[in-house]
Length: 194
View (cartoon, rainbow, N blue to C red):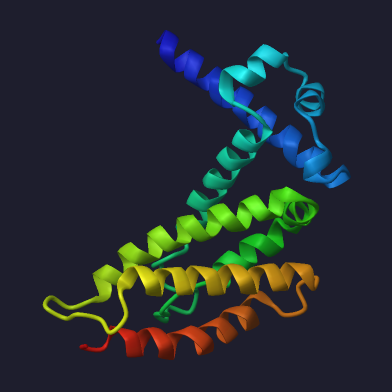
């Protein structure tokens, strides 16, 4: 029982620290935010911060990995219309659009760089598993799965960055449709028997 209480307190503290960082990123560049700023905003002590995180980058990375886990629920899931897509992204774009204040805050400074760096790494791993599941037994793809996964993750991250940098000029549906047109023929060709 004591561990459950401690775990809940620890989770609550981590949530407060994440919220403080996200709130600060609305006002300041990530690079200009200090641990002192975070603990002041969260109203916790320095030792409490360091009991959970090594530094602000560790806090940011932890939050990004949590966000990636939420967003990964969209990968492999059928679209809202029930259609199967090679690399479903509409729901991901919608999630970013719904949380645009958070992402706009990240645009300032290293926050967005961390998001894209960790995002590409995370998506590449998820896509490697998804692509392996698509290959029929005994079939050897023309391009190694890991290379295709890097290509897909990099393409998505690049398009997402462009979309955010340009103030989301297209709807999530339009962005997804464009991405599908770009990547589906390539991936299908690569998955053909080599």
